[in-house]
Figure 1: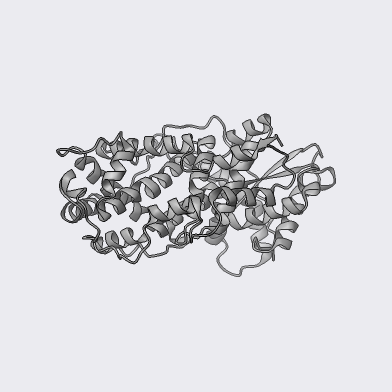
Figure 2: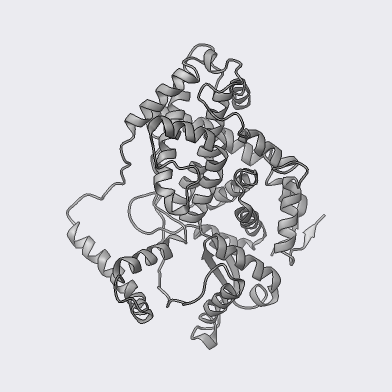
Length: 445
């Protein structure tokens, strides 16, 4: 691990950190303009230069990621496959291990507690947090919880039953589509509003936001985009195009968003700090490899990279589809043994069947009618012109519950006195996390 400055590391998580603040302003302008041009949902034109070779491993029955003892057993079993005694060459120096939030959380604590075993002997374990669906969902979920007052009004207006108050990870896809409707409608409304007389230039972002905050409804709408929806969409697009360094900056931005009382992302805040830490501390040669394989190309159209956690999700789905009756452990193991062959066979058959057809393109479900309904609501309740939308107004005409904490103020508070006040600042929080989970790190003054 490289020497680091503790002060420089803490500064990466501040809202005023130059790369974070510049990116927030830049993407705000870019996404609003993309909505006006009808290209907000276009995938990045990225094609990976390599494709991962995957090999499905046997199941580890009676082991769960919630138990430290179980995760330690799993770590030891996986590491043993890369040593001479486990059938490997014994030459493996570093082993990147992916997982969902809970397994990575346990893994990081085990590495901190037993660093001579897991970090200073071969193969050293380097944890990789699953970015999609799990990481992406938790960025989404933090913002969703913070802005549920605004989301609730939009869902009621659309009679959308999928935008529930607190969607589980299993409800992510329908909730995600609902937020995409709200994001597009709010973005197009803002794009049109900027063309009305006297509108502040969207390029002057700080002045633009200050003017919007005069009207509580306009503040909810614009901060929904600025602090939540555009962060999540930026994250999602960065996963699709393997922008690994950009993802580290977005994890740093996520920390205060996830620390609010409403978001309550206690575990993912810790893991976000540690993701940024590894990106700073790794040797440059390891970092080059890490950034190159942060997300995985799984085949298909450009812009379809996904997280490491998607592969076991697909294996799990295959098991549920194929092992449906008289389920035994032996049957599960045999299906896993055949998984790689079946996957290759499926791909070969698809290539033959679809040989003369043009490549399939991803299509979104139709949302134009719902977008039009929400834009009509914003025009009627927030304002049809810049002057109307930025008038001084402290009572929500949209009907947002006035008892709810204003999320943009809660995020600002999370930087200084903590989400509830009188607690750790972001600087103190980051210092505590990295000191506890990277006890081997040598810090410069």
